[in-house]
Image 1 (cartoon, rainbow, N blue to C red):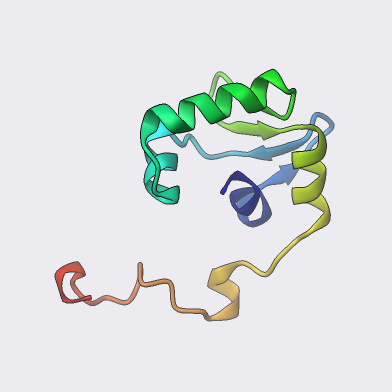
Image 2 (image 1 turned 60 degrees about the horizontal axis):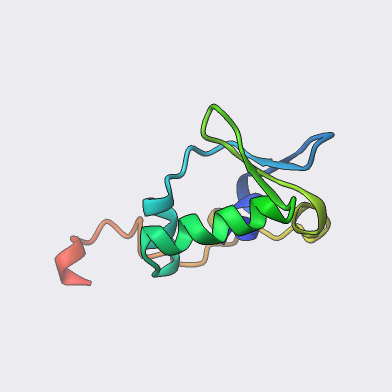
Length: 96
Protein backbone atom coordinates (compact mmCIF):
# COMPACT_ATOMS: atom_id res chain seq x y z
CA UNK A 1 0.00 0.00 0.00
CA UNK A 2 2.81 2.41 0.83
CA UNK A 3 4.37 1.75 -2.55
CA UNK A 4 1.06 2.51 -4.28
CA UNK A 5 0.69 5.69 -2.26
CA UNK A 6 4.25 6.62 -3.19
CA UNK A 7 3.53 6.08 -6.88
CA UNK A 8 0.52 8.39 -6.64
CA UNK A 9 1.63 11.10 -4.20
CA UNK A 10 5.32 10.44 -3.55
CA UNK A 11 8.18 12.80 -4.22
CA UNK A 12 11.70 11.55 -4.84
CA UNK A 13 14.13 13.13 -2.39
CA UNK A 14 17.81 12.58 -1.67
CA UNK A 15 16.80 10.29 1.23
CA UNK A 16 14.17 8.20 -0.59
CA UNK A 17 10.58 8.60 -1.69
CA UNK A 18 8.56 10.90 0.54
CA UNK A 19 4.83 10.28 0.95
CA UNK A 20 3.67 13.66 2.28
CA UNK A 21 0.52 12.25 3.89
CA UNK A 22 -0.06 12.02 7.64
CA UNK A 23 -1.54 8.50 7.60
CA UNK A 24 -2.07 6.82 10.94
CA UNK A 25 -1.51 3.11 11.49
CA UNK A 26 -5.27 2.80 11.96
CA UNK A 27 -6.03 4.42 8.60
CA UNK A 28 -3.40 2.31 6.80
CA UNK A 29 -4.98 -0.75 8.40
CA UNK A 30 -8.38 0.26 7.05
CA UNK A 31 -6.88 0.69 3.58
CA UNK A 32 -5.40 -2.80 3.52
CA UNK A 33 -7.94 -4.64 5.66
CA UNK A 34 -5.69 -5.17 8.67
CA UNK A 35 -5.82 -4.15 12.30
CA UNK A 36 -3.77 -1.28 13.68
CA UNK A 37 -1.40 -3.49 15.71
CA UNK A 38 -0.55 -5.48 12.58
CA UNK A 39 0.34 -2.28 10.72
CA UNK A 40 2.41 -1.04 13.65
CA UNK A 41 4.33 -4.32 13.74
CA UNK A 42 4.90 -4.29 9.97
CA UNK A 43 6.02 -0.64 10.01
CA UNK A 44 8.41 -1.36 12.88
CA UNK A 45 9.90 -4.29 10.99
CA UNK A 46 10.34 -2.23 7.83
CA UNK A 47 11.96 0.52 9.90
CA UNK A 48 14.26 -2.05 11.54
CA UNK A 49 15.30 -3.22 8.07
CA UNK A 50 16.03 0.38 7.03
CA UNK A 51 13.22 0.48 4.45
CA UNK A 52 10.76 2.88 6.10
CA UNK A 53 10.88 5.93 8.32
CA UNK A 54 8.11 8.07 9.79
CA UNK A 55 8.96 11.75 9.92
CA UNK A 56 8.04 14.06 12.78
CA UNK A 57 5.42 15.75 10.58
CA UNK A 58 3.66 12.39 10.03
CA UNK A 59 4.90 11.87 6.48
CA UNK A 60 6.34 8.49 5.49
CA UNK A 61 9.73 8.05 3.84
CA UNK A 62 10.37 4.92 1.80
CA UNK A 63 14.04 4.00 1.82
CA UNK A 64 16.25 1.44 0.13
CA UNK A 65 14.65 -1.15 -2.14
CA UNK A 66 11.10 -0.05 -1.36
CA UNK A 67 11.80 3.57 -2.25
CA UNK A 68 13.71 2.67 -5.39
CA UNK A 69 10.90 0.40 -6.57
CA UNK A 70 8.29 3.11 -6.04
CA UNK A 71 10.43 5.71 -7.82
CA UNK A 72 11.25 3.47 -10.78
CA UNK A 73 7.72 2.19 -11.46
CA UNK A 74 5.54 5.24 -11.96
CA UNK A 75 1.93 4.51 -12.70
CA UNK A 76 -0.93 6.55 -14.02
CA UNK A 77 -2.87 7.99 -11.09
CA UNK A 78 -6.40 6.64 -10.82
CA UNK A 79 -7.85 10.13 -11.11
CA UNK A 80 -6.14 10.61 -14.49
CA UNK A 81 -7.11 7.31 -16.10
CA UNK A 82 -10.84 7.69 -15.48
CA UNK A 83 -11.19 4.40 -13.62
CA UNK A 84 -14.11 4.33 -11.21
CA UNK A 85 -12.99 4.44 -7.61
CA UNK A 86 -16.33 4.17 -5.88
CA UNK A 87 -15.28 7.08 -3.70
CA UNK A 88 -16.46 9.94 -5.84
CA UNK A 89 -19.54 8.56 -7.57
CA UNK A 90 -21.88 10.92 -5.77
CA UNK A 91 -24.10 7.99 -4.87
CA UNK A 92 -24.87 7.60 -1.16
CA UNK A 93 -22.62 5.04 0.47
CA UNK A 94 -25.53 2.89 1.64
CA UNK A 95 -26.75 2.45 -1.95
CA UNK A 96 -23.49 0.98 -3.24
